Length: 99
Image (cartoon, rainbow, N blue to C red; front, side, top):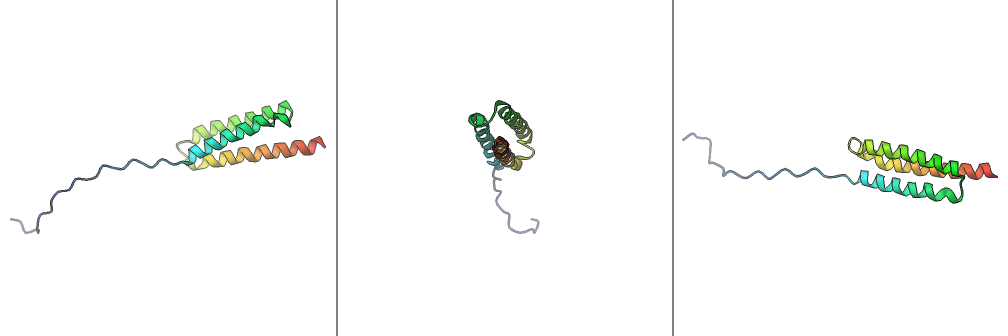
């Protein structure tokens, strides 16, 4: 016998845990969907070209969100917040211009 001490029973190694899925990209996409409804609902108070501008900006944010889904998931909620800020700015700008 080699004097290394008592032999330990072999234990099964637990299977690796799957990586935790972040809810942030999902929250960002839900926020972008809400911003789209705000943009399209603004047809009541805005002219058609302003709504088209809002939808084009939203499309750009959506494409960027799809590109950032995996590499930068924490940034997606900020994109929806940016879309909301743009919506508020356009509505306030239209209110100021119409007076």
